[in-house]
Amino acid sequence: MARLASSRWSIVLGLAIVIAALPFLFPSNYYFRVAAIVNIFALAVVGLNLLMGYAGQVSLGHAGFMGIGAYSVAIGSAHFKLHGLLAMLIGAALAGLVAFLVGRPILRLKGHYLAVATLGFGLLISMALANEAAWTGGPDGMGVPRLEILGYRLRGPDTWYYISGGALLIGVILALNLIESPTGRAMRAIHDSEIASRVAGIDVAAYKLRIFVLSAIYASVAGSLMAFLNGHITPDGTAGFLRSVELVTMVVLGGMGSVVGAIVGAAVLVILPQALTIFHDYEHLMLGLIIMVSMILLPRGIVPSLLARLRGGGA
Amino acid sequence: MPELLQFAFSGLTVGAVYALVALGFTLIYNASDVVNFAQGEFVMLGGMVTVFLHLAGVPLPIAAALAIFATVLVGLALYAFAIDPARGSSAVTVIIITIGASIFLRGVAQVIFDKRFHALPHWFGSEPIRFGGAAILPQSLVVLAGAAIIVALIFVIIDRTILGRAILATAANRLAARLVGIPVRKIVALSFALSAAIGAVAGILVTPITLTSYDVGTLLALKGFAAAMLGGMGSAVGAVVGGILLGLAESFGAGLISSKYKDAIAFLIILATLFLRPQGLFGKKSVERV
Image 1 (cartoon, chains in turn red, yellow):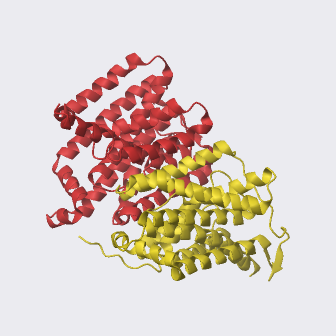
Image 2 (cartoon, helix red, strand yellow):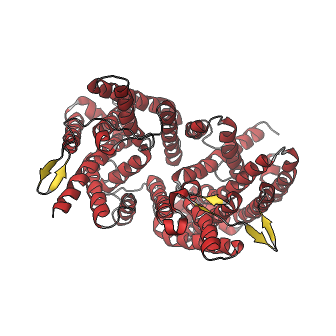
Image 3 (spheres, one colour):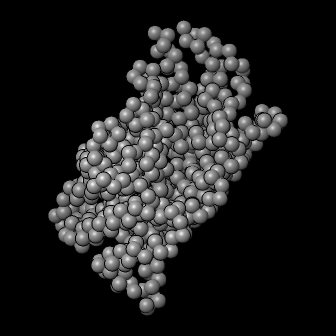
């Protein structure tokens, strides 16, 4: 079981089956919507997990890149009348470029300092989105024109469930291939000991930067998908500090360094508050509680803890 | 010229609050290596509990004392139920726990109190004092004096008492401190209590000027952190100086450059400090052991 869960293609196949089979259990459109949100967050978290779980760098500002993706789509199609897909590509390129530029100095930092620098970076982006109201509609956000492909307007949550599921699948395949490649081995070496890997001839700074850029692109695409799904975006909802915290929590909750864990973490943190929140007022209280309890009780994450138990049990 | 004086005064007032938040940060950081992002929630609780007790008819001084007491209890609970059980976790895990705690406290405040802004009466009236063309609220002077007293008190405790020695010893080397008989966990709990009290007092002092609501904590915590970082993590003097400098930078930045991006100044300062002088103004350069 443990070997099965860690083998590359069985993960992809399993995920594809789950994505295809789940809709048979969905009684209403609401479930498609929640599941699409899970897919989208999972995509961003798979990217962030590459950075945190493999390259060993934390980013508390990753929602900033989601914001870039979301607003690229919104601004591109509303102000410049670009096709949604083109705007999404531009957003991904932009997020990658921004990550490349800020990554070099930021990734030299470690521990608390890295956490706070990335946090500050994320806040600057959400602040800019909230303040430049002429472009972004300010704190109240802006509408996103529906995506149209070959004359079909894509609008239903079920449509976006399948699209986001496909995107997640592609993201997972890319991530798994990367992990198995020489780059992946170098990243794991960096995670275990930066100094040892530098001694072994790995260009640590270049690898970190590359993964940072890649994870930013993942987040940006996820942000664009979120914009298409919701049809309306706000700075707080896409790029806010709380979003960044949620992303990091999803990574740690699912299990750092586990691609399946990234998806599980996203699913738990999206679904649990939905299930527990009877009144809207309790949203913060519940989220804070979930974050604290899961970090204290499951510091290694759900999936690694489960795998360890399976191995230990001789299964 | 009067404008500049005005900016300087409002900068000093806000800076005094940042300095107190940064000082609370530093106390906890020194004793336990924990970066406590719930620090701003202490400020919020101090203000909010006072406001609601006062609304319920409790006289202001008693309401303030009860608010400090309640916040200290929250600080101790934070240590006992969230930080202590996670001993040995990575720095990032602990940061996320304190962020979770801050979101949780905000959520609780939102449910117990409400989501509106609240004010407290000014202690000595709200008639501004004219000085060189600038208008100064008497409450600003209260904030400055209060902050100065607290800072002095903390320095006396740390420098002159056996308790302060124990805190310093714990900060320097936890294992060695335990070996010479210092109850390290009690000292860490105490640093949380002390830091909560400082935050609560800051909240009570400044609420008449800046108002308070359930969500003022987040930005305050980040700015307190920026101040601590500017001064040099772990340095109490640095925390105070960093807080004042950040307050002044914000006030002049908002007045002379752009008020829309006032809150961005703190983060630009964080980034600039990190890249130019990571050890801060008063910090010691850290040497990484392999």
